[in-house]
Amino acid sequence: MLYAIHMGFVDGYSRGQSEIVHLVSSAEGVESDDDLRWVFTDGHAEMAPLTDFYDDLEELDKIDWNVMRSTYWNDTDDDPDRKRRRQAEFLVHESFPWKLISSIGVYGQAAVEQVQEILKKSKHKPDVHIKRAWYY
Image (tube, rainbow, N blue to C red):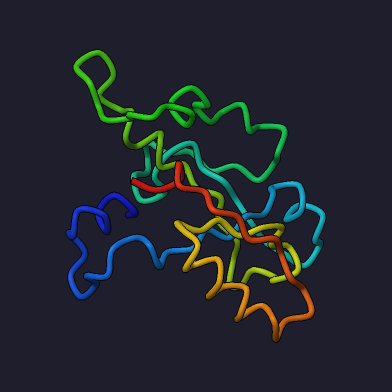
């Protein structure tokens, strides 16, 4: 989706990616909260039956970590399934507790300042970091 935003392919949104923030948490943090229901997939969740769903962190090895770490992950003649696998998801049912957000990644200094202003009103204040490599 971020690539689609970057390329201007999202109808109704034209402000680019500089206002997009990444909320960072961990699978272990989610697992430790007994009130949360969650699953993760080994590919795009909408592409069943190709995509499998898991509810045990011991099965994180089912994710293609090589393609997840790749800078470029388009499908190729040798591997026509890269894009689906790269879109593996960790899904939490209904809502996500703010207390489990460990940090926030942003595009640039303007976003850092905006997010820090918003966080002034919050008891929980995750660190905010510029993460340009997370953007196109």
